[in-house]
Length: 71
Image (tube, rainbow, N blue to C red):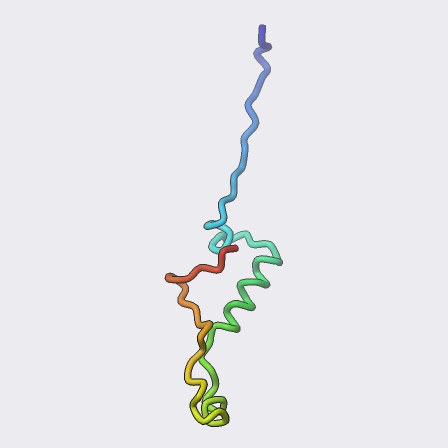
């Protein structure tokens, strides 16, 4: 017979989708998001002038809704 003092243990599950948008971020996640934000910009105009417009845009540009970081 099972005693009546048995209490189930709550299990907390964190999925990958909530890691980027959660309000409580670890420093590691926050640092990755900050680096991605710095890298996500167009190339400078002096770079176009220096390369004679061979490099016209940033090929690694990322839109926040279309492409995710997979954290």
